[in-house]
Length: 171
Image 1: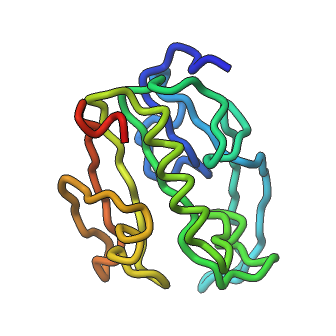
Image 2: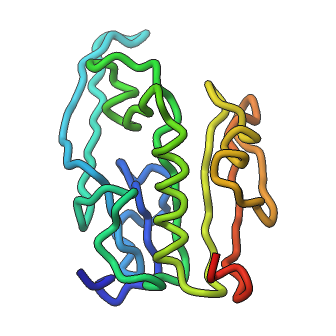
């Protein structure tokens, strides 16, 4: 499968929550599922409804992307980062669920995103330390980020930037 001539890949887009434009024509949105669900819940002022839609351009596993090597200039990798959700949990439906044996998934997913990244391209990796520390993630993937930023109320979400430099492209 071609990259559909788009320079940017979101390899596990979920419901595209951090995108300012969820229909950006330069981005190829990929996820391993399609989902349209809602949940009715009690709020402080009565009942409310939450909606979640996962509607990627391509349904694919981020550990086995159907694109040739060096297809994208920019890759966003925001895999699930919590393994303790129940099967019915709203957060699990919204964000996906990390398996208990997460190391092979994160390692293989990162390296698959690296494979489809063009030389001199950038990869942004978003991770939340709710259960697993970011240093454990860096140790798992075996690649040091160029720089990063902590965000969120408790500064547990990390945005890390990687650049695929020519000398590293062969690795």
